[in-house]
Amino acid sequence: MTPIVWVIIATVILPLTYFVWSWATLDRKGALAVRGNLARGFNTGGRDAGQQAPMLLGISKRLTPGSYESKLDHWLSLAGRPASMPLEKLIVAKPLLALAGAVVGILLISNSPTSTNIAAGLFATAFLYFVPDLLVYNTAVKRQEAIERELPNTLDQMLISVEAGLGFESAMARVASYGGGPLAQELTRTLQDIQVGRPRQEAYEALAARSSVQDLKGFVRAVVQADKYGIGIAKVLRAQAKDARVKRRQRAEEKAMKLPVKVLFPLIFFIFPVLFIVLLGPAAIKIIEAFSHT
Image (cartoon, rainbow, N blue to C red):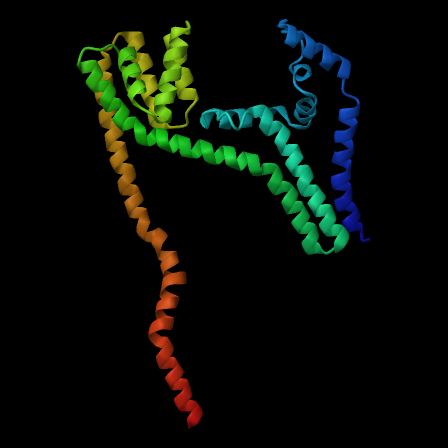
């Protein structure tokens, strides 16, 4: 084998060896004791969080940097923390998927140690490792876009409710109860935080932290300032609703202006060639036949 093949095999075998070594040297007695205490309902708050986790989760946490785990947790917060993709499941799934990609790469290299197979093995390992990240990021982006679309209508409904005589939190509860999108879910969670005793300002700031929509963040800042300085909430809602409608119209106009540029490349590379073939193809065939006879 060439030195490049040995380097590729070493990059796969060494992490796998570390993974097996971490599993073999794990404190099984401590993990069993923690599981027993949890089964009896004891509070093990002084224990390390990694010892409370299952064995595979503890090993995966060792292999995952803390900053990267925080980034995944932030993306999950933006995605609404779907039940099918908890943080622990992602942390465990990423090394396993990368290991599967590494095994596929080793099989390809062992059959034919070419540069193409080496690149395919590395690509499969890296791609499978980052597949959960792509899924979470895509879910988060779609959810934030849905929140951005729902915000103007939600503010209008809250304004109508406040002007009808309801309080701000009652208006939020009414809009959340009649809504079914992600923004209604976030408003419901904010109301639940307030009901369990969390200060209003912290609950509103947590609502802004769980979203990347700048319009929602601006709305939360306006509500916090109105609550702090005693400004009428109806005036704040009226101004915020008007501003949200204007921004929604501006976003629609911006997308409409970008549409001709986006259509240009498919038109040039896919539609025009087919059109030229259909229109000029028969004429070209006749010209070729005429010149071939002469």
